[in-house]
Length: 56
Image 1 (cartoon, rainbow, N blue to C red):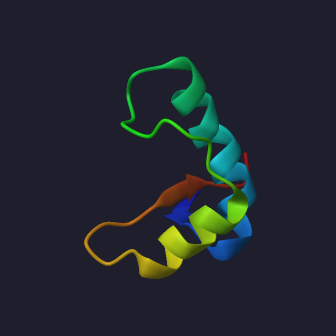
Image 2: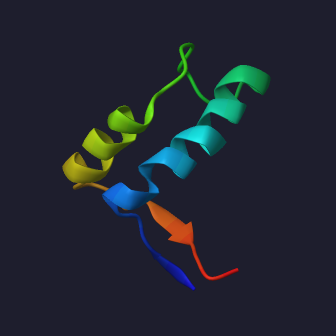
């Protein structure tokens, strides 16, 4: 199931995103993010959505 991310997803989303910060050039961010960073991003999302896959 694909659904919009909630604050409960922030920890896992930040783990996945940190992989890309550390190992690729896909993101412009250079410092790792913590769960609280993604909680704020999820709260403030207005122009786009953050989706997650659940139930796999």
